[in-house]
Image (cartoon, rainbow, N blue to C red; front, top):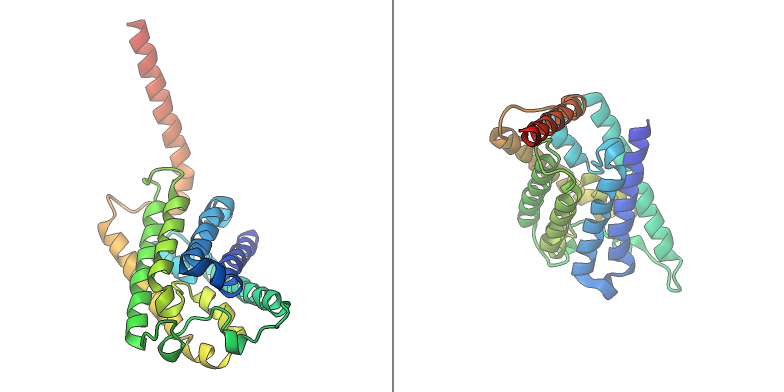
Length: 258
């Protein structure tokens, strides 16, 4: 339950930071500011809640890790439910903040940062282009997560890589569809906007799922050496590291004696 709670809180922070910036500060910071709001939120969360839950905060990421056997199915379901709850609560919080302004706020008119295509795309992009970009960018995000969190990756840099790649994804596709690459992020605003947002929500679920599956398949095909599960890494890596330290220390001592 602690992991599920942390996933809900993490998704809340991501949606509050990213969607909140898009709704409350878009005119001040523009596309670049919104992209960094999402990316920096994720970067910070990787280091803060990563040691507790792994910081998925995205059903597509959880799916990719599930396919790569880095999370058990029973835990994956709980993660996804927690992420959806966190996103919905965050979208509600953004709506309350926006509505507290002097002119009020209507989610049906303002959109509340909901993702869309066609007439609801910021740049007027159609279904086909939005569907393709969501697949490609979700695959990029999930592949980055899988690679950066591998036990053989440089230690301590996962958050930087993952946060920056989410920033890149937003820079590319905010003009197209507001950027999803995260079904929970799309679900939150859609619940309050209703109508067209709920009608188009299927794309921002299906496309990220396809992207996550492609990323997992590519990672499994290209990974160096045999797959190492998260539980195995957690159990074996400290002992392996201690063994290497002991061997290196012994080598240095022998060198000085000689």
